[in-house]
Length: 193
Image (cartoon, rainbow, N blue to C red; front, side):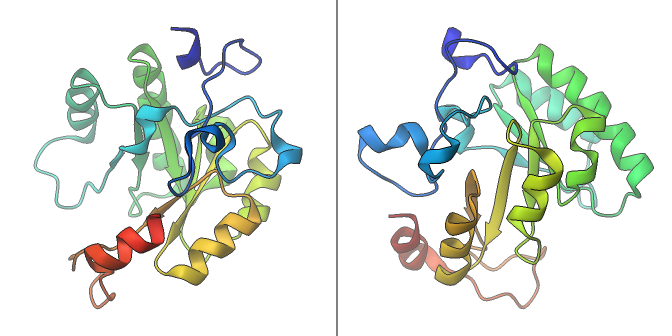
């Protein structure tokens, strides 16, 4: 389907999903300012649900997890392997990018915008301490820049800075963010609205 093609410069580009729910006519451009509507890379509607990896507690190799997820229809995965140095992270991400392209899925790097072009990743997802503008300067207009928000202020800051999408977390208490206050379903729904 033409709308699913994500090659730079390709025709029939899918429009990206918004950071928060909006009427259908606004979904085309999500939170991006009008001046950036020429962008070539977009979130596809299916990208609203994607895998965020964390190999530490994994019981299977990351490649197997990604392969099985792609077979089940995974549209996108964020490679969060924080324990790897840049060289190992880039090697692993490059291999995963090559594999997932064959499956019509995309890879996002976690907090390492300087490796996006070298690995061929679709973009980067930033922790809340990182700057969307700085990442955009590194990855360019044709890569996705996501942002991890934990409250209303961070969500609005990401929107104002031109993030392509935002994840809200944690919704529930989690071992990956010990001591972080959970949003809960009600607050999550309010922020996502």
